[in-house]
Amino acid sequence: MPPRADLQLEERILKAAQRLWKMQGPSSLTLRAVAREAGTTTPTVYKRFKNKQALHKALADRVRSQLNEHLFAAKSLEEVCRRYLNFVHQHPHEYNLLLHAWSDVFHPELPRPGRAWLMTQFANRFGGDPERYSLATYALIMLSHGAATVLSIPGDEIARKEVEENFLKIADRLIAHNDVLGE
Image (tube, rainbow, N blue to C red):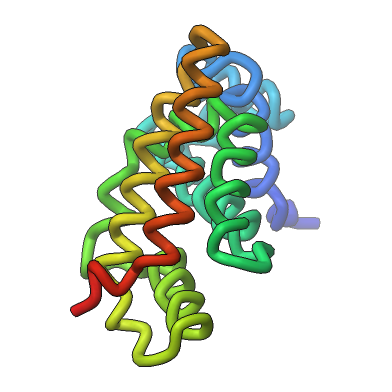
């Protein structure tokens, strides 16, 4: 009887990589450690991911999808900002993984479901064509990313609280006064 392909192998590898990254950060992500955690062999991991960078990219794509799913459940634009920080608080190592894959969020030739979704949320709330809210969306994404980057680094809790409170005030004002950035 010929061997049967493990259809869940890639998912097991990515889950194992994410568990390692979540617990210990980037230093834990070796293909050998991932193989061991996934219950497979290092050559098998290499068959699915040609190198560590390919595994990083696949893992970043997975985390970005999880972040988007978390954000897309928001009931308002203001809640999106709070959910963004919530994700960072719950997943600081995973968020740091996204720092190295930031260009995928802004590259105009790649799918950007988060950007499209945010522009649609602005249009649903304030009316008009979603593209009209392109600059407001970029401002909100960059503001969120900047605050999240600072908050993903351990530090003084008083300063962290100050950053978070000011981010939320600024984000709320940007949303309310998005017409300043209108095209």
